[in-house]
Length: 518
Image (cartoon, rainbow, N blue to C red; front, side, top):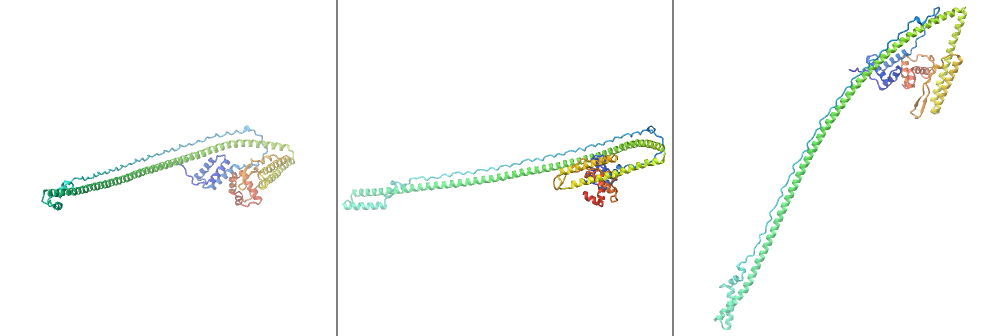
């Protein structure tokens, strides 16, 4: 089970820890792991505690052992053979921890399928009709249409025509004097017959034509009626068939629409179910992947933290062992050297015949020490002047980046030449080693978007500044921690802060934070 860090560092605090890691010969991630270990173990509760611990470690590492002013006298020279050589401590190797990655399984889903529905088309029965046949009216000849029958009617005894013709015939025969003769009877019969024939012929023709006209009209009317009846039946049949076709089309369209709507709804429902199943499956897979990744990251972080702590612990133990062995050897060598120096001093003292000779020699040594202090102070002043000149050059807005770089290089060359001349003239060695230059860096200002070259950082001579009481130990630790953000070493950051205080530019740690924007 992973140990939870009770204090969550911000991204800027994590970056600060990564920057500090290099000062302890650690990788950025190893530095974060060690800081987390301090928080988990309770040695630190917040970022302020971590800065304090880092400052204490830096101070302990940078602290120089004080010289022990021993006055040797009157000892016999000792050989190094008198001391047993220190046995170097056996180095240890760190046990590296691994972790088994958590595997994750992906879930699938069964796709929902749908069966499309159809519809039964509605068919229609066509309606027919029986055509009506016209009943023809035949022209049947009746007795009244025959001349024969008409004559018989006209010649029937007592008929008006017969009586009239007989009367005319007798009158004519009487006028001739033949009334009682047979000729009169014949003439009357002939006249009646001829008159009846003419009348019968006319009447028979009239009756025949009337019958024919009536038959023709009856046939025409019958044909008209049949035609209209058939047209009406055809219209009714066509209307019925059209109505059935429309009803069938409407019913089929409704059935087809309902089938399409059902199929569409089924397809949409299946798609929705499939989308929901796919979404749920993807969400489950993502959750499983995220959970597995989180577990693997936690396992990797824990293993890395443990490995970093273990490797650092072993490295610290090995370094301590090596340092102890080296300290033991140096102690032996210093003891031998001190003993031999004491013996030499005693021999020299014995060779001096008077106390005056010893005092003169001591006075000369003191003069050399004073000269070295004076020359060192002078070198410090020269260095500070060069640093101020470089700062003014970089702050001059009228100079181009190339001009600034040339002016800075000239200041560096002048500083190096002056220190070399001072060293040669004073016979004080080691002054050139007090001034070191770091490679120049390039910075871009946000307001002008131009590239300017930062001057080389120069390490000031030691003991040039002293704590005036304005800065506490905690302030000094904060300055050392923030040094890397400005391309300075911890000692350079402290020296720069003292310079600002001595020149009156700042009066407190808050002023320094304002100047550097921290």
